[in-house]
Structure formats: C-alpha cells, structure tokens
Amino acid sequence: MSFPQPKPEVPQLPQNLLRTIDCQQGAVRAVRFNADGNYLLSCGSDKSLKLWSVSRGTLLKTYSGHGYEVLDADGSYDNSQLCSCSSDKTVILWDVATGQVTRKLRGHAGKVNCVQFNEEATVILSGSIDGTVRCWDTRSRKFDPIQILDEAQDGVSSLKVSEHELLTGSVDGRVRRYDLRMGQLHVDFINSPITCVCFSADGQCTLTSSLDSTVRLLDKSTGEMLGEYTGHKMKGYKLDCCLSSKDTHVLSCSEDGHVYCWDLVEGSLMLKLPVGKAVVQSLSFHPSETRLLTAMEGRVQVWGAD
Image 1 (cartoon, one colour):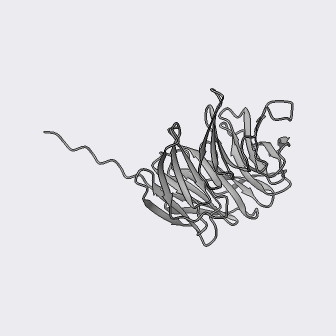
Image 2 (cartoon, one colour; image 1 turned 30 degrees about the vertical axis):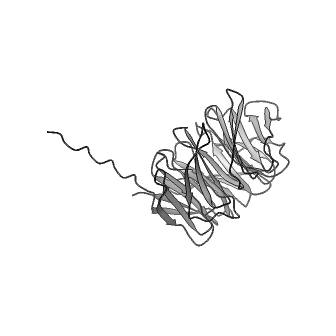
Image 3 (cartoon, helix red, strand yellow; image 1 turned 90 degrees about the vertical axis):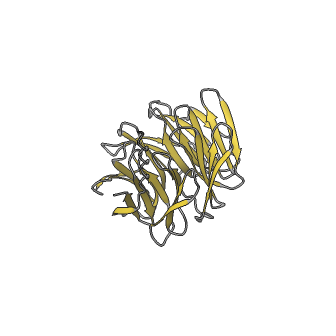
C-alpha cells in the first residue's frame, strides 16, 4: 500500500510588519540587507549612510563623507567593508568598524545610481547617469578604474554582479549581460527605460523592471520572456524589483504605496503589501529567510512571515 506524497509547504510571504525604523536621514533612497541578512544599510538624502541591526532596529554606525544624497550601497561578504555611491559623482569605500573613508573614487561624469562589490570584494562596480559602468580595484594604490564599460546609450540605472557575469539595466531600454570569462556581451531590448535588474538565485534567469509598469522574467541564455508581472505603478520613479530568496516569488515597489508580490510560475498576484501612502522607494529581500525590507520617505520597514 502506497502513501500519498506529503503536500509541499506553501512558501510563506513576508506580510507581517515586524518593526519600523525612523532613519532620521532625510528621504531613504535605498535600503539593503548585508551579505548574511543580520544588518541593513540605509542611504539617505541627507548625505549619510547608516548601518542598523535588523533584529533590534538599533543604529550601529553612521558613515559621513558624501557631498550629496547617497543613492545605493553594498556590504562586502565578510562585513568588513562597505561601498556607496552618490549624486556627488563619487563612489566611497568605507571601513565598517572605524567609519572612516578608505577610498573616494572619482571619475564618473554625473550622479552614480548603483554600486556593488564582486564576490571577493576585490572590485567595486558602479553605474552612472553618464552611461558608463566603472570597475575599481579596492586594493590598488591607483585611483583610476581598471575598466570602463561604455556600451549604454543612456544612463545606467541598475547593476548586479555574479561569479563571472555582470548584468546592467539602462534608461536606453536595454539589459546588458557581460560574460567576463568569455568576453562576450549579450543584449536584450525591453523598449522602456529600465529601473532595476536582478539575477535569479539559480542563475538561469534575469528579472527586469521598467517604466512601463511591468516586471519581466527572461531566460538568461536565450532572452526568451518567461513571465510578465503587472498591476503595480512605475511610471516616473527608479524603483526596485527582486526575487524572494528561494526564487518562488517576484516582488516590486510601486508608486501607489504598496509592494506587489507575484507567484513566479503562475504570474498571479499573491500579495499586495500596504506599506503607506507615499511611493515605496526601495526594497531588499533577505538572502535566506522570509524577511523583506522596504523604504518609504524617511522610514524603513522590516517585514516577516511570522
């Protein structure tokens, strides 16, 4: 006699508000989990970058050194360094413990929208409104970039780096994937200014959000569209999208004050999370748990399943 297979567990969604953090740094332009998800970074319009404990909601350190609002930040895999970028055209490498500026990297001709470490934190990649991605050696004595990628015809709004691949999204409506091992460039045309790009956790797909209020899931190798997710509003703001840590759901900010969460396979809207009355500026999904960060005006919200 055979027993029926146990039903797979329904993946939990981060629909309960665990805490709200008043960041007191002007408007929060971006919020990011660190590599292990125990800390969060908030980028402020008051030129500051702040590091918080997620579980306690307490401020651990403030990093001051930018000359204009901070637009994006990233933490190194070992939590020893941070990088951030700003409207002041610079990228800063920080020492986490001391709060000091390790390096201030100049070279972009306009505001820098996005920044990320590679996996070993030996290189910082930054994308700017000037249409270039610059690669900076974090250990070099030289202050010049080791490489400049200038294929974009308009500003670079978003970038993500995986082991040997770089994904960029541009206002020119194109998603570019650089295979750094093969020296190849793959381009997918979306026909609307791109606000955010992501790799899926399994590395097989890319997710892009654009100003036609649509999030698209593309097959990385063929460029075939696997899913389209709509219902949210993204017409005039550069807002984030992301995948849940297990690739089961697609999430996007929206200008109507909600975070929209779709089932990746079905494409159906599973959750419309009411964050507030303003634009949801930024979001970040925990690397392994069902936790979500959102940013609205001057506050950051932490959401969980329990």
